[in-house]
Image 1 (cartoon, rainbow, N blue to C red):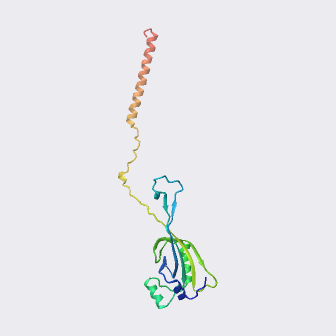
Image 2 (tube, rainbow, N blue to C red):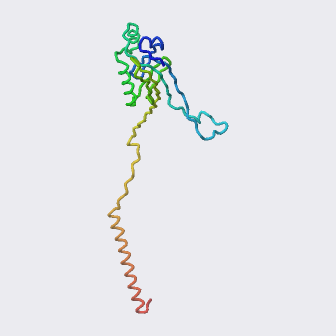
Length: 206
């Protein structure tokens, strides 16, 4: 690959594309490769079965091949950056550091390209082409993958509608006393009857 040292020569050769990775403006987009793929079930699918139920869409991915350059302070470049809200004065090294920060912190960002907008993306791979002869520019390839978020639903419950557990009924003391008295009375009657029977047998009346 030939080393291009002039920023304007880079832009003349590759063109200028309004690209953002989060809040980081990308100076040159060389290629964009969206990735749409599915996971398929490993089990056999019954004939007549709906095939769409046998596959699950994976999060969307995209691969970008880009170039970071020093800020072009020409009137046309400044005007273009101002229109696209990407005006800045960072060097390509500053932009590289910001790109690495996004990756290392697992930051979730939106990616804007001329073809599409990819929301809730995180960097999964970053490859930088750096050589001692490279000046004023950084060639790199970045892979990003969508992060899917789900929200949990919290429902309030009316306490009045919840059935309460019945407490065990305590024994009635009066009822206990009454039962005990009846038992004692029955025992006394049984003993008295037993003594009368013994006396009758003694005198031959039984």
